[in-house]
Length: 448
Image (cartoon, rainbow, N blue to C red):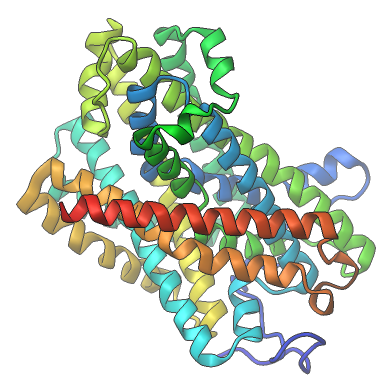
């Protein structure tokens, strides 16, 4: 258990405890000699966060949207990304200004019963996210090497060794690997776009909102699924902690600089996530929708059809390789999020390998049983269910985040201005409403 660093501060019920990820806390020096050196020093956390916006859980929604409706839903991906930029910016500001990550802030603000409830909900969300990563990686191993799904699911448990190795070698190395994997995914889809030859005018028009999205129930359902799968609750906890790995000055001017550069970092990184999600939808539209295959909604279907429809050898293999990189990337950041959540909410500090093993075992058991008894169709449905679970938990992270950053007693001069407060609460309410609607529809479909 950590020890209080001070008496309770204004606006908080409890004193601030030792930071989460203590081994990495303020471990990255900041060179303040010029702006680009500062920007380089702060670059990194945003890319760890961006990984959650391009994980295997997003692929099914993007594939379904592109194959069924062409480029129309690109506007939904754009709006989702703008929401993500706003929320991640608030998460970074909370961590930098208060010295607390979101989990610690919840612990220090709410009663113990509420804190425990929020912790349990967050653990369920992390397990659901891990489930998507397990299934996505197992599917990629099956497509690339013919490894049966149940065996591939078990193999994914071994990635805990990679995470441990990287954590011991320093936080910058972990960030470098994540950025390299993001670049790999982006390169793979750039190749897919080039050979798919989408109609650039139609792509540009797809980024403009269309009333048809609201009027057509089928289109609206997939649009909400894309929104629900984009903003990940554990990313808000993750970002509010890992921005504290930088050695910025503990002064108003130092925090202001850190908030500014952290926002630039996450915005640039999330732009890569926007490109990758848009690229998945564009490839699906240019390949499947154009060929009249409007029913492609599963990763395995897309893999089987890409090479014959595009007529380019290796198109399917590149797609599967990008999926494997996506699954492994998400695994790295999911490990950190799980550690931050347990330490932040409960102040319980387990060894990273034990925490990782617990989380992965929770994900492996249902995934393996589903693969054994229900095969590919079962794992595809389980992947969708994992996104529904994430959607259900999202508001329990977004509302506290907006509440804390809008509280002058907690944030002081960094409190959200009126316009930002209005925008942030509006986004929180929209996300809650859309995810509630998606949840009702998804469970209705599941029961049928």
